[in-house]
Length: 330
Image (cartoon, rainbow, N blue to C red; front, side, top):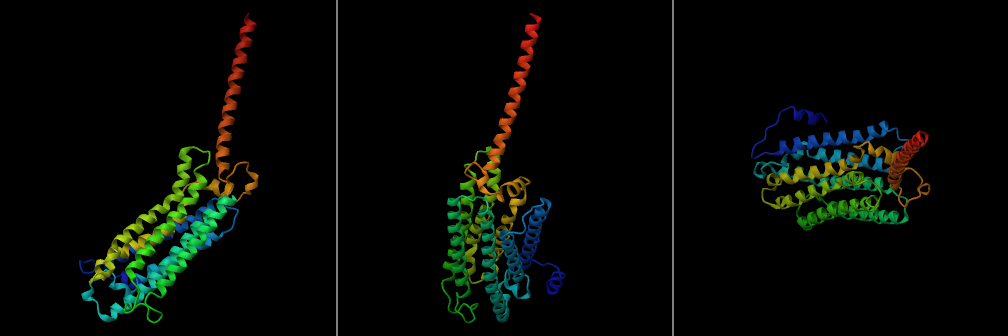
């Protein structure tokens, strides 16, 4: 950390041939915002005075944050200076050290994404005790684990088991990156589908329904960032890739930031207090409707029915009083 502080005190000088300071600035900024998002998540838990201790989803998001912190550090170390710098101004030793950092960063990046996805998955898993919903979530969880295992294994051994950061005898890395990006976006899309399946049929106002769905659909932002990451992927395979692929390095940091932040975004509305305290941790057998979340719509409908009954009673009382006055007058 002292090395990073000493380096940052030298000032920032961004030129056409050296965009690495820009990569560092974006990395620091996203890391700071990610930290604030995670703190907000846990401070909100304390504020809501949740009776439930930290669950598996909280532990998973902490691991995702720690891996994200480690991945961001790979772009802040001295060896990472090649990222955003003209390759003709890089020595052979600097390039070799930078490739080692790149290899470590890729491994940590996918570990971060895996734990972020599993945390989001675990947050949804507790929403409904319905057997069909649980079966779908089991399948989704298994798919995420298989995706993570395949991607991490290929990243680890993409150039063999000995000195894997050297690109002398590697698989087709461009094809693999496209596979990892497409499958990454697909898993995020699948993470959105089960909440929509559970929440959309509930009998609540359209505004409330869309509000709840917007929290879980925030992972669409991750998919958008992955699309930009894929657009800039070919730049990694140009002769001057260390400089031309600068947008790819930045988009990778954005994907990581959004992957963690969208796990915390459900705590940004007091409405979630009722979901966590009154719905998520209640035995499903106590509800008369099919879904646990439908308790919200039942309460909403109950209040409307109660208000309507009270209004009708007041009208009848006024009507009876008026009739009595008329009869007395007669």
